[in-house]
Length: 437
Image (cartoon, rainbow, N blue to C red; front, side):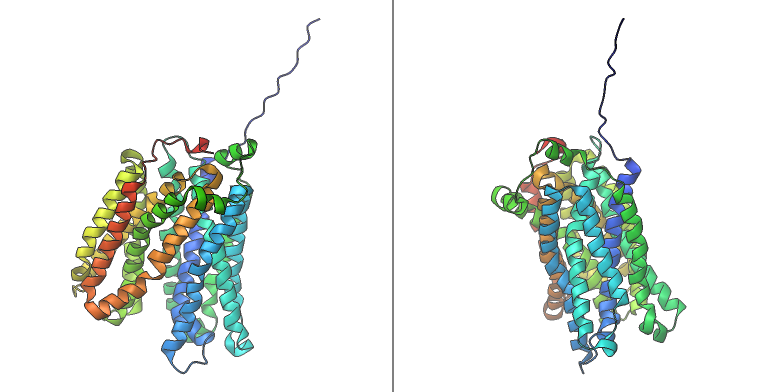
């Protein structure tokens, strides 16, 4: 008699391409949607409803914007917390936790009572919710990028890493479009009374969809190898600072250009256009909304270039183009022609798409898998502090004291600084990141 023993094979679970890309895209879309609706409300709504005790409208706006700035302070803290979880527990569980933290905080903002209803507790609760947003945002971006790049097939990491970046223009379009639509459909009184809450509460729909997709994911192959070999780092934050500090600094400086280009083209340009150039807020928002299509279109193009020519070469070329663009900043924005101003916005946001598309892949590939979540999250969020939180303030100060051309020089200087950082970073196109434990 012949006996046969059935062979048992264990299949490693894999994630479908569509699920990976959608799960990485939805989180960053929510992230930027939340960011833009809060930024708009911090200027238009919150000074009146949460800080009405100030007799000076400017002071009330400053107080409101102070809560907006809380997120930039909280993001590196969130990067450290969720980075630790992502490098110790796994990408999947951390992404779910980051999305919940961010989403719940945003929905709660839409449900908050105003100062007239509960007094000083209202702005305090608003600040607490904004802090929660910042913590969640600090861990969301990096996790979404790693979800995409660590599931990518060979030769497709930059292309996969581009999908989370598409969330930025999508979030901008959804946020700006929602405020423009609400403004058109209801009176100013209704909008101030309850209409402003709709974008915040409606973000729950995106959060539920994102959670549904992410809960069905398997762990990324790269981090699964870390778990299988028990190579988890005890304190990833310490490991990054002690063993990968040069990459932390270079990655932070390299990403500064991305933030400066974006915030000068959006926040500063919006403020300058509506206060100095005679545009109404609605007119300029419409121009920016249309120009955001260039932002969205150039992100995939940047991924194609990064795959063909390399991340380093592509990023250096874009930084150089941004430095040249800075020389024309003043003449285009202050041209007096709506067409030239629109062209300025298109050029700026196209450059943003080209620099933003590969940056997630770059920042993830310069760190080994065991500390990749923490390292990429810290570099991106530290660059946000230096390149984003101060950019509109610095630009306004330069434009007021020295003229608009000085803002262009500021952009050129930031671009050259990032260019020098990219020169010092190795090319990672051919690295086997799944085996860099």
